[in-house]
Image (cartoon, rainbow, N blue to C red):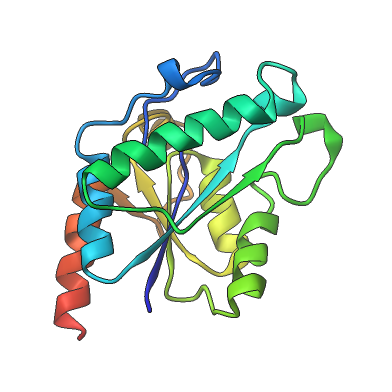
Length: 183
């Protein structure tokens, strides 16, 4: 069964430099939920990997994060899609944890828990931290121009191995074309 790993803020939903602190602030990027549902129908399992330092900073609590994710699950279910798992880092950036991207801890946890190789698994993000985590874990790094993606493109010249798409919908459309060719 194929997997697709996605960052949350800036990839699935609009991002904010002030953090997404409640369900009302969580708003999907147009086309992202329909794209995930298309990937599901093609047999892909979707896993979300997200830094949520707002927890460690005290901007919101775990119940609020769960409510945000519940909203995401419900909106996606209405489109006929689903997310199989959400991995999140709750730590403050100064905590020195192994799970906060750009470290590969969350991706390694996925690899170990599911007993899969990440070599053919795309990790779609919008920041250099996402790209670095994908590289460190041996996943395929993918950058979308939504969220902080445009800024990432401007500020980094080390992206020769990175697949770049306008948004998640375009990424998934291309991924599904390639998946059909390779079947």
